[in-house]
Length: 494
Image (cartoon, rainbow, N blue to C red; front, side, top):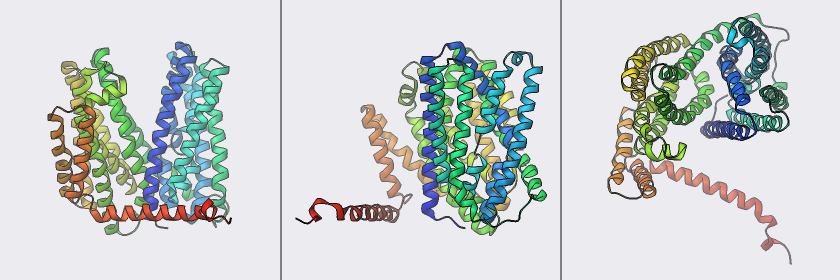
C-alpha cells in the first residue's frame, strides 16, 4: 500500500494541527485550573505528572515504532500486530506501575505521595505516546485519523479535568479525571478502528516470534527515545544547577519558544515515518529519493523558521511573555541556530529508526548529554544562560554533522546543498527591511513578501507548483459550488 502525495500532505497538516491543538489545550487547562486551585494542590499535580513521564516511556518501550513499521510493510497483519501490541502494553504497564510503587515506597521524598504518584502513573501508562489503536492508523498511512484521535483525546482531557477542578479541589481528582478521559478516548478510538481490523486475515493464537520482535526491537528504540528525551531536557537541568534563578528563567523562556516551534518538524517526521518504513524495506534507491524529498521539506520549514526567530526575537518574546524578558533576546537568537539543526536532527532520528539503527541514535545522544553536562557546567558558570545556549547550539550542530556522516554509507552525501544556499539567500536578503526604520508590522510584512518573491525567483518553489496548487483549489471550489447549485434559490421552479 503506497501513500499518495496528497495523503502525505494531509497527514502532515493534520498532525501539526493536532500537536498545536494539544499544546494550546494544555496551556488553557493549566491557566483555568490555576484560577480554581490552591497553589499547593497545583504544585502537587505538576510534581506527580512530571515525575511519572519516564514511567510512561517505560510502559511503551519503543514498540510503537516497531508496530507501525510492521503494519506499514504488511497491512494485512494489522489485527495480529494490534493484538500482540495490546498484550505487551498491558504487561509493560503492570510492571511499570509495580516499579513506580516500589520507588515511591523506598524513595523518602516520594513516600508521602504514593497514592498521588500511582494515580499519575495510571495516567502516564495510558496516555504517553500513541496507543496501539493509533498505531494501526499510522501504520496504514492514515496519520490524519491518528491526529483526529489526538485532538479528541485533548478535548476530553480538558473537559474532564476542568469538571474535576470545579467539583473537587484536589490533585488526586485531576489525575483520576485524566485517567478516565484516557479510558473513554480509548473506547471511542476502538469503535473507530474495528472496521479496519475485521477485514484482516490472520492465524489464530499467539506468535512468539512477533512478541520477541516487538520486545527486542522495541527495547532498542525505547532506550534511544529515553536518551533523546533526556538530552532535550538536560540543558534546563544544567542551567538550574550552575546559574542563578534569574538566568534560569531567561533560558527557560527562550528554550520554551524553541520547544513549541519544534512541534512542526516533529509532526512532519512522525507523519512520514510509515512511508519511510515501507520504503526502507524495499529499494534503496527509492529510499534515497524519499530521503532527498524529506530533506527538502525540512529545509523549506527549518530555514525560514530559524531565520524568522533570529530576526524577530524581540517581538516574539514580547508576544510570548510580554516585555519583561528583554535580556533573553540574544539567548533566543543563539537558540535559533540550534532550532535549525534540531529540525534536521528529528529527521535523522526517524531515518535511523526506519533503518533499524536506534543504537546509533542512543550513542550520539548519550555523547550529546555528556557534552552538555561538561560544557554547560563550564560556560554556564561563567556566562550564565548565554553560555548554556552556546553549548546547546554546539551540541545540536555536532550531532547533526555526526548523523550526516554516519548515514552517508547507505544514504549517500547530504542532498539539497544548493537548496540550502538558495534558502539562506531568500530569507536573509529581505532582512534589509529591518534597517529602514519601518514599524514592526511593516517589517514583518516586508520580510514575508520579500521571502515569497525570492522563493519563486530562485526556483525554490517553482511556478508550476503554484499553478498546480491553484488548479486544485479552483477545482475543489467548483465541485463545492456544483453540489450546492441544485438547492440554490435561483434554480428553484417559480
